[in-house]
Length: 338
Image (cartoon, rainbow, N blue to C red; front, side, top):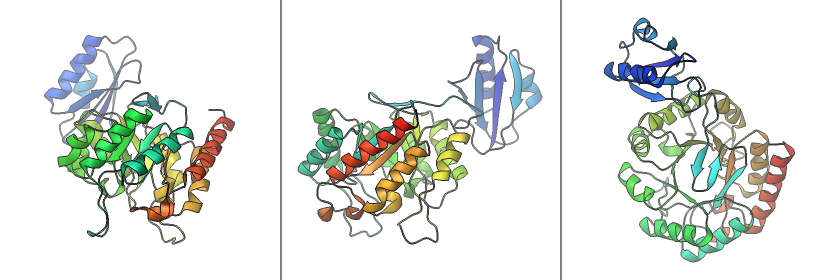
């Protein structure tokens, strides 16, 4: 695979930019126009050996042709230096405000979802999380309520006015899940599920992409490239901890990755301290650290009765605990002056 970035001259016309896009298309490249650059910048990916830099540089209006060293083009700062803002209903992720998503790890019942949604909204959460399909290590563990949960999430959105996020596990379920929720999530176990990445890239809903627990930042961003190149630029990266030698928590939250990803990419970055730690008492400190590190948002597991939770009860905060944490996170954000 080869990638290329074509920077246009300040006075380049729309017709000249269009001619570059046409030329790249004829060469077999998939080209996209950056939405954050003036003058225009065109990014393209294609099969190795098809690029002729001199031919591209000779087109009218072209200032220079750059061959990026990274394996990703469309999600890179070279392609778009301006931060991307992702709209999820009325909520904007990456717009300078702290976005908090909260809710149960899995939707278990209408009562559980309603109690949780009311509590997290009252505490200031802007997005409601809750999954219908769960990837479990054991085939005998609770796998989620499926479409029944999706219907409950859609009803909760109507009742509480919170856009909803849910995980999709299978390319065959993308259309179904997207029909009910406002934002899809690709979980850590599926970061390298390339057919799934491509499928969520072919639909219009925004996508959360969790970092794989064994993945480098470059691998994470390259996974995002799979989604972007299929036509969906509405991607939010989610750091949720990586697997290390440390056993004090489920995973090790890598806040370095937040800073690195925001330097290399224009995409917003959220942090999931609940799945990173796996322990209720660690969620608060990690969430506050994520805000201080510059994360655009935080996603927290909340359950009214964690001891009865069918999935990840030990990491779920009680509604009152979440309310206290949310207030502290917003104070940290305010103290940072952003």
